[in-house]
Image 1 (cartoon, rainbow, N blue to C red):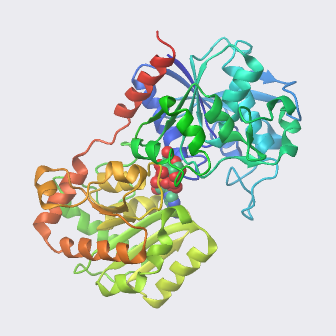
Image 2: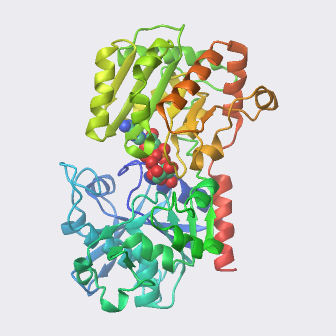
Image 3: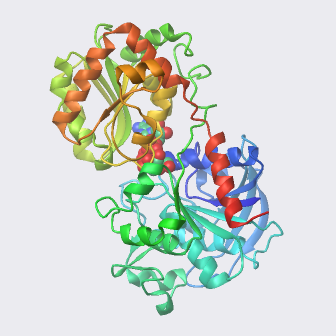
Length: 483
Ligand code: ADP
Ligand code: GLC
């Protein structure tokens, strides 16, 4: 089974969120399960620097519209994964975030940039590919590659079967009709079964309409997005294609997120040596300027600071959290008012609330290990990786009942604790009061050391590796291309 995996970010080189993690870990897991995968990504400067020995493979020109010519290079990631890098300096030689400039404004030529990624993906998946290696499956991810299934069907005809995975329906790649010509689309594509979406062009809509199969990253999210309340304008289309829509829970990279191997931690530990976790808590308290106390639980947050993550609800109850008593360690960046709200909370409660605004991978590991409880009260969450990292680190998560959070976190109950299923705390409502109530409950249970230890062991015993999900994807591929 040959799979072309087209994606716009790839950890550790270029990552804005969970998509980059998935792109790094799922392809090697597919290969371990017997598939042969090529990961197609734009050659951002980080790739040019990381793979100076990349080998030239092919040249693309005359793709239509205003697509510049591009070259394809091949490189080997340390995981052994083969990467195909699209070299097009005018579009991709930009440092930092792959989607926007240093001021935080989306690059104006994003339709052309990700149009090119989609266009080349479609070509490589077709009979017209300049390469001998032809995929059975073209696997696309999020809006940035949404046009690929459409180009494949409308421009190339014969080729691979296509799969479109939704990592986050909130990002739909919506642009004005005026960009159509640039990306080699015309009036014949402008209709409800083409690329048109409420009077605009949507990359994601095109992919969802034309992919042979749609997947998303958890079973609960797969159901939620078919409802008008949570379908973000796409519910009708998704209901229409319900027989082609499947939810597969993400895995985690257990080589990177494993407390027994994690070089970022003060002390490594496993489920039989959970006492060592206390040392990580003290180290985190020191690192972040918190008072070193062990009589109160430390809540941890690692997140993009956006509406999706529901962290405004936590900022609103920060004072009450300190009163519990409890401490809070926050790592994140994003919306400026939310960054300011957390900074202000830290200024009001020095030593009890610590905030680091920014992106810091090693600190993310130390918060997962050093916190007592991981906070993730998302309003919606397609899958969420952080709550799985925290489970793996014996740091029970406190989450909202939505999407992948509902599929991975089992709310505390006495019976659940004893049978081994309960592994955290689940709050139903997205209100500050509901979250505070759940925080209070979790903080009081934390005082009950034997029960808490059992909860941590439950959390650490579930297998979140990619092996299971990879098998499920392979099964889907086989449904599309029986071999
Ligand atoms: P999303 O993709 O919606 O942001 P996920 O939970 O799927 O949410 O993935 C988030 C990923 O980004 C995790 O790997 C998390 O550790 C990482 N992350 C988010 N914010 C930060 C940050 N400020 N510093 C370091 N890592 C972060
Ligand atoms: C998106 C979602 C997140 C998911 C990630 C990887 O960023 O917001 O829930 O875990 O994609 O699929």
